[in-house]
Image 1: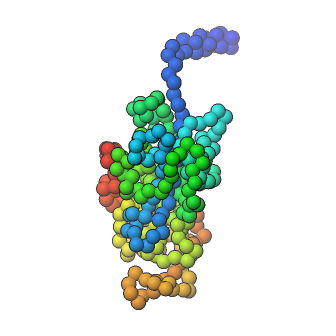
Image 2: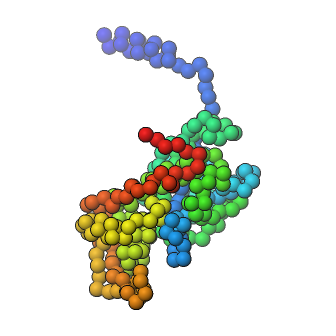
Image 3: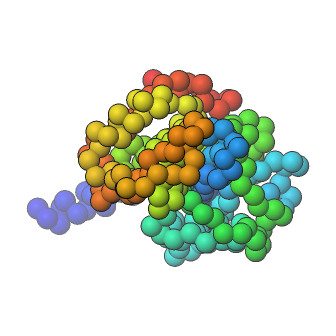
Length: 267
């Protein structure tokens, strides 16, 4: 019985062999977010994305750092390698969060390319110094890159998807605190959320949501030197003990307004 089963299984496998072999190229692209600390900027303008210019790429266009996966190379290691080569920024494995896979047949006009995208949050990036395969590297405002005419391939869609992953992390974890100083005001924390949400939230509503989240932040016996209104110093806080938030800090208002050009609403 066992031998007969193996013969039938072998014949079945042979019948399923491919007659056409297509050439596929597997890439890794990485979206690195940071927040520009310039206090004069509106919160929605402070969110920035790391992009580079490819040698021989489309004139005037940016691209995400990325490239082909090498033999015997893990996907995460490709992400770290290409970001370092093309921008000079060094990421660590713990920085990476997978966004998804992008493989539309027309996403690259050179050949069939499938990209696995990663996202990283870097509060204090080091100086950018591309090593190779890059003519320039820069952090560019997310709102500027929403115009898909400024990016090559389908990288505007990848950036949009990566921001959703980052936004979900802010809802569920204390990652927003990594963009704050050791002592911070409620307003400073709210502006981190507004940067990723890409719209303003009601200060009272935000304060209420934070207050309902146990061990997220802790007030300290100290006031800031400045406040939201002249002459009113603000309460200072520090990070709490919680890594995972007990209650989601969720906002879902006006998300359709931040969808990049060229994308359609999904059900």
